[in-house]
Image (cartoon, rainbow, N blue to C red; front, side):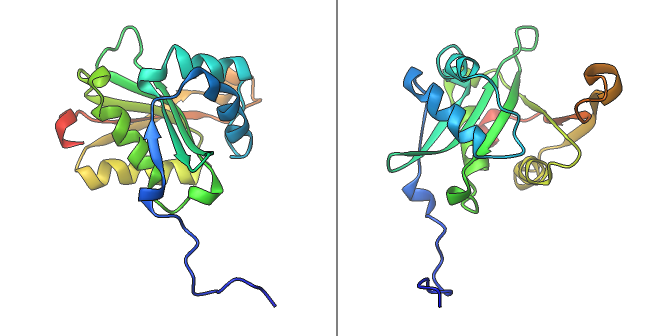
Length: 178
């Protein structure tokens, strides 16, 4: 017999999770979090360290107590100053169901560092249902238009060793309405 009460909701409240800009010591923590969030592609620990330092202004870390339970890596492409490109969204299983991914995305967009951003772009493989759902819901809840198309073709860009990556674009939007 299970000791858990089946009627008890084990999903943490949104208030139990704090958001902040990542710091250098978060690099290895991000690396471990991403490893615990399949199907995300792992990057090197050094790449995650750079995300937490060079790109901290367009990334967000989510903590619940002492645990890192969420992370979004993003950047503003040099030739597209009005775009936030979201590289990865990681939410640990113990923080799922709280709306954390959408909350983290809104946190980044609200920063002064993103004052010129009118579009969010990301790439998603066709089978990553959680990402599709999160990005579509983010746009839908805010009444923002979207578009999608294949950006990186499996055969052309990955020699058939990786699935197609579809570009999903949200916008244009007024940052204050996000």
